[in-house]
Amino acid sequence: MKKLAAEFLGTFWLVLGGCGSAVLAAKFGGDSNPLGIGFVGVALAFGLTVLTGAYAFGHISGAHFNPAVSIGLVAGGRFPAKDLPGYIIAQVLGGALAAFILYQIASGRDGFAIDPTSAGAFASNGYGALSPGGYSLGAAFLCEVVMTAVFLIVIMGSTHGKAPVGFAPIAIGLALTLIHLISIPVTNTSVNPARSTAVALFAGSGAIGQLWLFWVAPAIGGILGGVIYRWLGDDTAQVSGT
Image 1: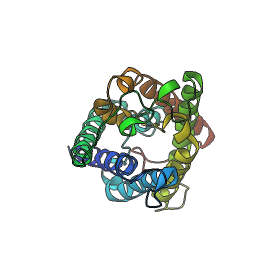
Image 2 (image 1 turned 60 degrees about the horizontal axis):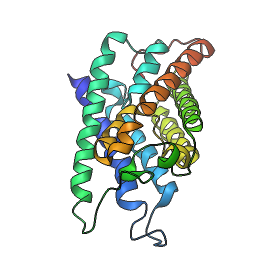
Image 3 (image 1 turned 60 degrees about the vertical axis):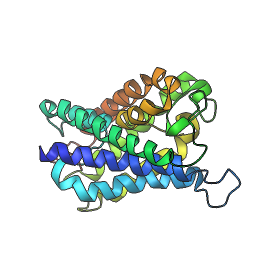
Image 4 (image 1 turned 135 degrees about the vertical axis):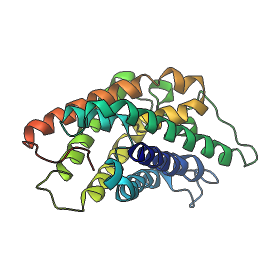
Protein backbone atom coordinates (compact mmCIF):
# COMPACT_ATOMS: atom_id res chain seq x y z
CA MET A 1 0.00 0.00 0.00
CA LYS A 2 2.86 2.39 0.68
CA LYS A 3 4.18 1.83 -2.85
CA LEU A 4 0.77 2.53 -4.33
CA ALA A 5 0.38 5.63 -2.15
CA ALA A 6 3.77 6.88 -3.32
CA GLU A 7 2.76 6.37 -6.96
CA PHE A 8 -0.53 8.15 -6.32
CA LEU A 9 1.19 11.14 -4.70
CA GLY A 10 4.00 11.27 -7.24
CA THR A 11 1.63 11.27 -10.21
CA PHE A 12 -0.54 13.82 -8.43
CA TRP A 13 2.51 16.08 -8.12
CA LEU A 14 3.54 15.56 -11.74
CA VAL A 15 0.12 16.52 -13.11
CA LEU A 16 -0.41 19.37 -10.67
CA GLY A 17 3.04 20.84 -11.29
CA GLY A 18 3.42 20.16 -15.00
CA CYS A 19 -0.11 20.68 -16.24
CA GLY A 20 -0.67 23.38 -13.64
CA SER A 21 2.18 25.41 -15.08
CA ALA A 22 0.65 25.06 -18.55
CA VAL A 23 -2.87 26.03 -17.47
CA LEU A 24 -2.07 28.77 -14.96
CA ALA A 25 1.26 30.25 -16.01
CA ALA A 26 2.22 29.48 -19.62
CA LYS A 27 0.26 32.42 -21.05
CA PHE A 28 -0.43 34.38 -17.91
CA GLY A 29 -2.09 37.63 -18.93
CA GLY A 30 -1.81 36.83 -22.64
CA ASP A 31 0.87 35.80 -25.12
CA SER A 32 2.65 39.16 -24.96
CA ASN A 33 2.94 39.27 -21.17
CA PRO A 34 6.58 38.73 -20.11
CA LEU A 35 5.35 37.03 -16.94
CA GLY A 36 4.10 34.07 -18.95
CA ILE A 37 6.54 31.15 -18.73
CA GLY A 38 5.83 29.80 -22.24
CA PHE A 39 6.75 26.37 -23.63
CA VAL A 40 10.22 26.43 -22.09
CA GLY A 41 8.82 27.08 -18.64
CA VAL A 42 6.27 24.30 -18.97
CA ALA A 43 8.97 21.87 -20.14
CA LEU A 44 11.10 22.77 -17.14
CA ALA A 45 8.13 22.39 -14.80
CA PHE A 46 7.49 18.82 -15.95
CA GLY A 47 11.17 17.98 -15.51
CA LEU A 48 11.22 19.47 -12.02
CA THR A 49 8.17 17.52 -10.90
CA VAL A 50 9.78 14.23 -11.91
CA LEU A 51 13.13 15.20 -10.40
CA THR A 52 11.68 16.24 -7.03
CA GLY A 53 9.15 13.41 -7.00
CA ALA A 54 11.84 10.83 -7.71
CA TYR A 55 13.93 12.03 -4.79
CA ALA A 56 10.86 12.06 -2.53
CA PHE A 57 9.31 8.73 -3.50
CA GLY A 58 11.92 6.78 -5.47
CA HIS A 59 13.08 4.78 -2.46
CA ILE A 60 9.49 3.75 -1.75
CA SER A 61 7.93 2.84 -5.10
CA GLY A 62 10.60 3.38 -7.75
CA ALA A 63 8.95 6.68 -8.77
CA HIS A 64 7.35 5.60 -12.01
CA PHE A 65 4.43 8.12 -11.98
CA ASN A 66 3.55 6.92 -15.47
CA PRO A 67 1.83 3.75 -16.79
CA ALA A 68 4.12 3.71 -19.83
CA VAL A 69 7.18 3.70 -17.56
CA SER A 70 5.76 0.86 -15.47
CA ILE A 71 4.94 -1.13 -18.61
CA GLY A 72 8.41 -0.44 -20.02
CA LEU A 73 10.11 -1.53 -16.82
CA VAL A 74 8.18 -4.80 -16.93
CA ALA A 75 9.41 -5.33 -20.50
CA GLY A 76 12.92 -4.43 -19.38
CA GLY A 77 12.91 -6.90 -16.51
CA ARG A 78 13.02 -4.23 -13.81
CA PHE A 79 9.49 -4.49 -12.43
CA PRO A 80 7.26 -7.48 -11.63
CA ALA A 81 4.23 -7.80 -13.90
CA LYS A 82 2.01 -8.77 -10.96
CA ASP A 83 2.36 -5.26 -9.53
CA LEU A 84 1.54 -3.49 -12.80
CA PRO A 85 -2.29 -3.19 -12.46
CA GLY A 86 -2.07 -1.62 -9.00
CA TYR A 87 0.55 0.88 -10.12
CA ILE A 88 -1.46 1.95 -13.17
CA ILE A 89 -4.64 2.43 -11.12
CA ALA A 90 -2.79 4.48 -8.50
CA GLN A 91 -1.16 6.64 -11.18
CA VAL A 92 -4.43 7.34 -13.00
CA LEU A 93 -6.25 8.19 -9.77
CA GLY A 94 -3.44 10.46 -8.57
CA GLY A 95 -3.41 12.32 -11.86
CA ALA A 96 -7.20 12.66 -11.89
CA LEU A 97 -7.23 14.20 -8.41
CA ALA A 98 -4.56 16.69 -9.45
CA ALA A 99 -6.56 17.66 -12.55
CA PHE A 100 -9.68 18.12 -10.41
CA ILE A 101 -7.84 20.43 -8.02
CA LEU A 102 -6.26 22.29 -10.93
CA TYR A 103 -9.71 22.79 -12.47
CA GLN A 104 -11.03 24.20 -9.19
CA ILE A 105 -8.12 26.64 -8.99
CA ALA A 106 -8.33 27.70 -12.65
CA SER A 107 -12.09 28.24 -12.51
CA GLY A 108 -11.56 30.76 -9.73
CA ARG A 109 -10.54 33.37 -12.30
CA ASP A 110 -13.27 35.41 -13.97
CA GLY A 111 -13.79 34.43 -17.56
CA PHE A 112 -12.16 31.02 -17.28
CA ALA A 113 -13.51 28.57 -19.83
CA ILE A 114 -12.30 25.46 -21.64
CA ASP A 115 -12.79 25.31 -25.38
CA PRO A 116 -12.84 21.58 -26.29
CA THR A 117 -12.09 22.42 -29.94
CA SER A 118 -8.87 24.34 -29.24
CA ALA A 119 -5.39 22.80 -29.30
CA GLY A 120 -4.00 22.06 -25.85
CA ALA A 121 -7.22 22.93 -24.04
CA PHE A 122 -6.62 22.54 -20.28
CA ALA A 123 -3.12 21.17 -21.07
CA SER A 124 -4.63 18.26 -23.00
CA ASN A 125 -2.85 16.26 -25.68
CA GLY A 126 -3.98 15.97 -29.27
CA TYR A 127 -3.23 15.62 -32.97
CA GLY A 128 -4.59 17.26 -36.09
CA ALA A 129 -6.73 20.25 -35.12
CA LEU A 130 -5.93 19.62 -31.45
CA SER A 131 -2.15 19.61 -31.98
CA PRO A 132 -0.51 22.91 -30.97
CA GLY A 133 1.41 22.88 -34.25
CA GLY A 134 -1.25 21.18 -36.38
CA TYR A 135 0.68 17.88 -36.68
CA SER A 136 -1.01 14.82 -38.16
CA LEU A 137 -2.06 11.64 -36.38
CA GLY A 138 0.91 9.76 -37.89
CA ALA A 139 3.42 12.39 -36.78
CA ALA A 140 1.92 12.50 -33.30
CA PHE A 141 1.97 8.71 -32.99
CA LEU A 142 5.58 8.43 -34.10
CA CYS A 143 6.65 11.27 -31.82
CA GLU A 144 5.03 9.72 -28.75
CA VAL A 145 6.46 6.26 -29.45
CA VAL A 146 10.02 7.51 -29.98
CA MET A 147 10.02 9.99 -27.08
CA THR A 148 8.69 7.41 -24.66
CA ALA A 149 11.19 4.79 -25.83
CA VAL A 150 14.09 7.19 -25.31
CA PHE A 151 12.68 8.15 -21.90
CA LEU A 152 12.72 4.49 -20.84
CA ILE A 153 16.28 4.09 -22.06
CA VAL A 154 17.37 7.08 -19.99
CA ILE A 155 15.48 5.79 -16.95
CA MET A 156 16.97 2.31 -17.18
CA GLY A 157 20.45 3.56 -17.97
CA SER A 158 20.57 6.09 -15.14
CA THR A 159 19.29 3.52 -12.63
CA HIS A 160 21.57 0.71 -13.76
CA GLY A 161 23.71 -0.89 -11.10
CA LYS A 162 26.86 0.52 -12.69
CA ALA A 163 25.52 4.09 -13.07
CA PRO A 164 26.61 6.86 -10.66
CA VAL A 165 24.58 6.53 -7.48
CA GLY A 166 22.11 9.25 -6.55
CA PHE A 167 22.01 11.11 -9.86
CA ALA A 168 19.22 9.20 -11.62
CA PRO A 169 16.44 11.70 -10.77
CA ILE A 170 18.48 14.53 -12.28
CA ALA A 171 19.05 12.66 -15.54
CA ILE A 172 15.41 11.59 -15.72
CA GLY A 173 14.11 15.07 -14.97
CA LEU A 174 16.35 16.64 -17.59
CA ALA A 175 15.32 13.99 -20.12
CA LEU A 176 11.66 14.78 -19.56
CA THR A 177 12.39 18.49 -19.94
CA LEU A 178 14.11 17.86 -23.27
CA ILE A 179 11.28 15.62 -24.43
CA HIS A 180 8.83 18.46 -23.77
CA LEU A 181 11.00 20.99 -25.58
CA ILE A 182 10.91 18.74 -28.64
CA SER A 183 7.32 17.58 -28.62
CA ILE A 184 5.08 20.25 -27.07
CA PRO A 185 4.41 21.67 -30.57
CA VAL A 186 3.51 18.20 -31.85
CA THR A 187 1.18 16.70 -29.22
CA ASN A 188 1.51 19.03 -26.24
CA THR A 189 3.67 16.15 -24.96
CA SER A 190 2.18 13.16 -23.25
CA VAL A 191 4.60 10.19 -22.97
CA ASN A 192 2.37 9.47 -19.96
CA PRO A 193 -1.15 8.00 -20.25
CA ALA A 194 -2.07 8.98 -16.67
CA ARG A 195 -1.19 12.62 -17.35
CA SER A 196 -3.20 12.60 -20.60
CA THR A 197 -6.22 10.93 -19.02
CA ALA A 198 -6.29 13.28 -16.04
CA VAL A 199 -6.68 16.50 -18.02
CA ALA A 200 -8.79 14.94 -20.79
CA LEU A 201 -11.50 14.32 -18.21
CA PHE A 202 -11.93 18.10 -17.97
CA ALA A 203 -10.91 19.19 -21.47
CA GLY A 204 -13.99 17.91 -23.24
CA SER A 205 -14.97 15.54 -26.02
CA GLY A 206 -12.09 16.44 -28.36
CA ALA A 207 -9.39 15.33 -25.91
CA ILE A 208 -11.40 12.28 -24.83
CA GLY A 209 -11.86 11.20 -28.44
CA GLN A 210 -8.11 11.29 -29.08
CA LEU A 211 -7.06 9.81 -25.74
CA TRP A 212 -6.56 6.33 -27.23
CA LEU A 213 -3.38 7.48 -28.98
CA PHE A 214 -1.88 8.68 -25.71
CA TRP A 215 -2.29 5.25 -24.19
CA VAL A 216 -1.30 3.14 -27.18
CA ALA A 217 1.74 5.09 -28.41
CA PRO A 218 3.44 5.60 -25.01
CA ALA A 219 2.82 1.95 -24.12
CA ILE A 220 4.46 0.80 -27.35
CA GLY A 221 7.34 3.22 -26.80
CA GLY A 222 7.78 2.05 -23.23
CA ILE A 223 7.98 -1.58 -24.31
CA LEU A 224 10.47 -0.75 -27.08
CA GLY A 225 12.66 1.26 -24.73
CA GLY A 226 12.57 -1.43 -22.06
CA VAL A 227 13.45 -4.22 -24.47
CA ILE A 228 16.22 -2.20 -26.13
CA TYR A 229 17.92 -1.33 -22.87
CA ARG A 230 17.48 -4.83 -21.47
CA TRP A 231 19.61 -6.03 -24.40
CA LEU A 232 21.94 -3.04 -24.58
CA GLY A 233 22.73 -2.73 -20.89
CA ASP A 234 23.01 -6.45 -20.10
CA ASP A 235 20.74 -5.41 -17.31
CA THR A 236 21.56 -6.31 -13.72
CA ALA A 237 19.98 -3.40 -11.83
CA GLN A 238 17.47 -4.02 -9.05
CA VAL A 239 13.79 -4.30 -9.82
CA SER A 240 11.59 -1.19 -9.30
CA GLY A 241 13.07 1.58 -11.39
CA THR A 242 14.19 4.93 -9.99
